Length: 507
Image 1 (tube, rainbow, N blue to C red):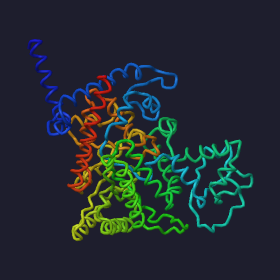
Image 2 (cartoon, rainbow, N blue to C red; image 1 turned 30 degrees about the vertical axis):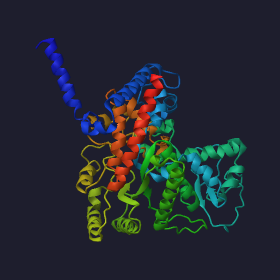
Image 3 (cartoon, rainbow, N blue to C red; image 1 turned 30 degrees about the horizontal axis):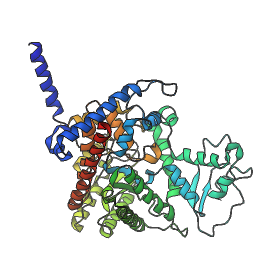
Image 4 (cartoon, helix red, strand yellow; image 1 turned 135 degrees about the vertical axis):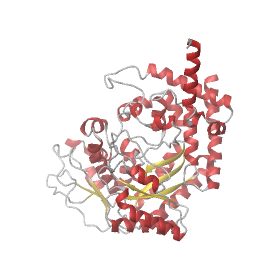
């Protein structure tokens, strides 16, 4: 074979292989708009990426001795924020956020600050907090009735504090030991309990099984602050507004009903699942009206709820949640989008064991004329061919609309270059980029996820991100007409985005 023939055959093989990708197919490319402007904007973004690959990602520092694009997110976060590429990714219209746990979507600092405004919010610790216990003892939070007896202690650091005694959060913070930093020290203690930092993710809990210890406790701490009607309402609103600011126009929030009730404003722990869904619906409409009144109607098309509970329930307990999901769908047909089981998959109950109840649920939905698809977590494990890995087969046979997910911080992959996403894209799978639990991981919105995907592959470009964003709306649980409207709004924003990129660099 001559050199010229080899080169021709080589290019043909690469073209054939790349043709499997969605961003190589006309049915996905044509909707992105005029070829010339799309390719021009894509070329500009690729040039920025190439420049910063040398100026940013090839310069080792004392803080990051082994730096590379797509590296461990928590280590690279500050560097990411400093790049020109990230500024453009922030502006990208991102379509839908389809996999995010509502109780971990707002910055933990916002949640704490909001809870501090509530006079009924209390805190406790299992032991007195001092230099020896502050790093190993978690705070517990809960809203109490207005007439809850005053505590004899000023703070959890008071010399005479007895473990598990509830104290008003404002008092505990104001009187937190000055040796531990006073009010700022209280904030650090509380926030550290709700976040995973680089040391924890990559050193202390550096395996997928270990990290779940910290991951699970972060939720438990946050729930105490969040599961209070006034805080809950503000949190949902902040989630929607912050999503919109990051270019997200539609969300499907995985909402946990595991505790069945939350504390209502008067302190009674009986705010039902139906009242919680009603509240979420009210906030969605308030945000929609607010955005529309600002002339920003294209930026938000709505939100739905994926009902979730944990995957370690008895058959009887699971049946209660499945029936509750059906009841909520009947009451709020436009809000309930699907059902999912969550929690550590490696230690949870496999879908196969729940099969009788899951099939019964599908039968009940058909009889009631309801559509409540499964939208399962599945295959979130490093196992290959074990009972946990086989959840993928059962999820598919049960008709799951989507499958989530692969997470770097939970140590299912070491970094983006080692992530299976490029393989999925190269085989033409439809993938929705999602943030999962940004309050815990620090990847608020979707910009960080889109950035990591963009910098870790030479094949992926702005065109790829456009296809992923647009397709996220098309694979959502929006009704057909609303889906068409959402895509039309995204198309307009995408064209404006391309125009801004081209005009900025041509001038």
